[in-house]
Length: 140
Figure 1 (cartoon, rainbow, N blue to C red):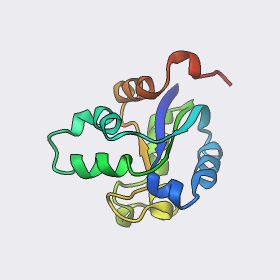
Figure 2: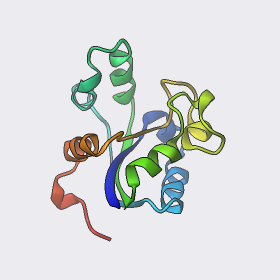
Figure 3: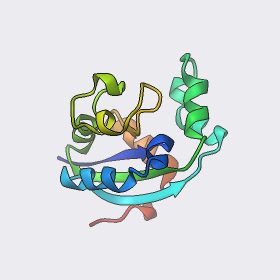
Figure 4: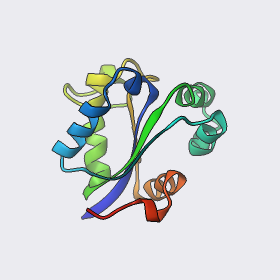
């Protein structure tokens, strides 16, 4: 089933110059970028994006981190894109991620874990719409 998911290459991975490697891994896994941009989120933009986590203890540190430097936001398309992207990312904590996953390779710790990905179809729709108007997502 072809679907779309949102991916974010987080500030820590951008700072490490891992953008090219991460996109290459997406494409190698059959996840095709159909929209992409680099931006720097404001704290309020990060808070809006992660609003679902507002009551969680990590909310402030997460949103501060996401506003700390440039990120690359992408829409990835492919068969079972959400599930495949989550497998490619690995566990949230890079120390617990399977070897070779994006977080195991590029993450440092549970907070600086290199990438973000949508966790469901409903979340993907919200997240994609947060950063990309439909006209910015192109068919390939």
